[in-house]
Image (tube, rainbow, N blue to C red; front, side):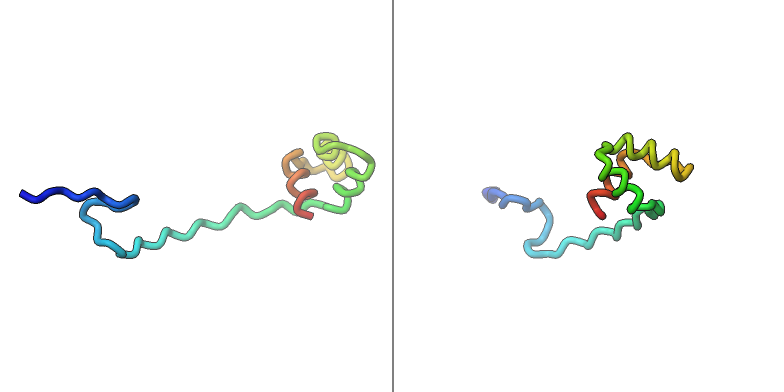
Length: 78
């Protein structure tokens, strides 16, 4: 009878040491970004409006809905 040895951290029974793991599958591309007038967003931000107010004013001016989260992302990115 053999004495069992202690496994190293991350080592699995039945797996050879140093054997490469299979590469993960590539991630599908993200959803396309909506075209937003960033200049209008910046102008509204310069007036001192917060993200929700900017989203409301943007919808009023352009007629297309945009969420306050999208406003925040675009102002931080841009």
